[in-house]
Image (spheres, rainbow, N blue to C red):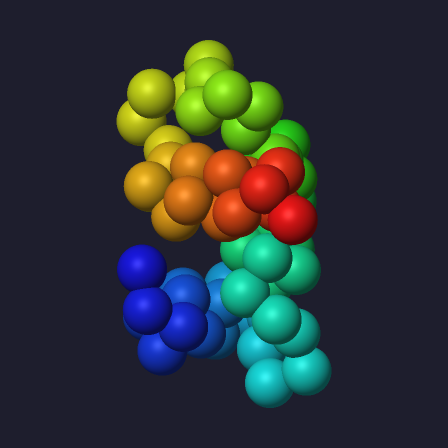
Length: 68
């Protein structure tokens, strides 16, 4: 998901978005929604939340973090 789209979601939820990077902002959105703030932490592309809208980006960023 593009950062612009994430900022729109954050704005709808009353979260200021300009000072956060993608991972932090998505985690703040997750927390605000009452969910775990687990974005970009999926180990081996495993997630027990199959309906999560962040899953594709989550897996990509988690994989990137492991390879560095």
